[in-house]
Amino acid sequence: MNADYLSTLPTIQEFFQINPEEELQEGTRLFLDAMTEVTFSDGEDVVSFGAGNEDGMYIILEGATVVLSREGKRINRLGAGDFIGELALMNDQPRGATVRAVGEVICANISKQLFEQVATANPKIYGSFMNMLYTKTTKLVTEQERIKSELAVATRIQEGCLEHDFTGFNQLKDVTVTACMRPAKEVGGDFYDVFRIDDTHLCFLIADVSGKGVPAALFMSMAKTHIKNYASLGLPLAEVASRANNQLCYKNEEGMFVTVFLCVLDVETGEVKFINAGHNRPFIMRGNGVFEMVQCKANLVFGMMEGVPYREQTLQLDKGDCIYLYTDGVTEAVNPQEELLGDAYLEDMLNRHKEQADSVDAFVESMYEEIDRFADGAEQADDITMVYLYRK
Image (cartoon, rainbow, N blue to C red; front, top):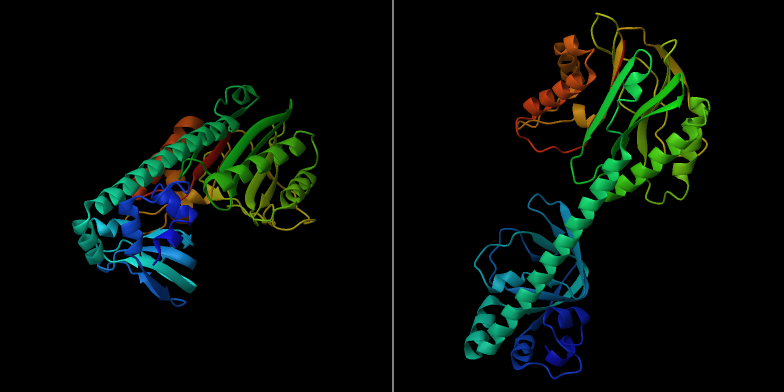
């Protein structure tokens, strides 16, 4: 390979701290001159997980590759100018991932043995390479800190969008309510809302956006805003759902959607009007009975298709009745044996604590404790969100 050519590539200039206006440092020139050109065909592995690292380091000159985890899951994509396996020149660890060619890929390569030979002959090469690694690591740490800081801000913004103080709602006649979300990541896609429409009508809802992380949180914010804006007008729930859905379909190029269980309670009569937009069916307990899943029809999720009609349904909450809404992070919690918690186990959980039904905060806390016991240390894979209302 020609050092003069390689040194014109922007990523190599950044990697080796090359100033185009200055002459190449001797160590950098010798390093780049020692590289040879290799070609990989479509589907061929540049490096393979668990393989030795004697082939050293690659720089992609043309084409693209995918990075695959040990399980074969795609975790990244690398293209022209990106580096593969630079740490192989410094350690004896086997490859930690597979990098596979997508179409023909041309790389510059320096083997571990050749690097050691040229570095021994000219220590400046070793110094140049170490300086490059230090620069890259410093930038990586800085970038990670920036991302961490921005995620922390996003988390605080999301927390600020969710209601945490339910004191005002619990002063409504015959009603106590609470809600909680535990995100799986720094920011989540689940959300809930509780707000008054007027003196006698309380809106409460729970929802789950497709996907996770910042994209889901952004879509969550849009969905929450549209639903609250239309519901606050006192419109029929079917119209609230239709308008919110149409807004979320508009320019939804990423194809995101949200499941929603949307309710309006008449605090005087106990009538609950609701829309189920593809969400998990809630559980209800009447008086001194047992928790049972609400039997209701499901409509299409929000954000999937414009102009969809939504069906308003009703149920009755008399004094002493309660209703428990949740997202699939509850029923899809897993334990170390990779077993799902499931609907039946959730029903048992609810009924084990039905004596706490009139204490909304204690009841929800018990549900989270039950999930933690079931998970037994297994990593939380999805947001876990609950809304619980008791009519006194």
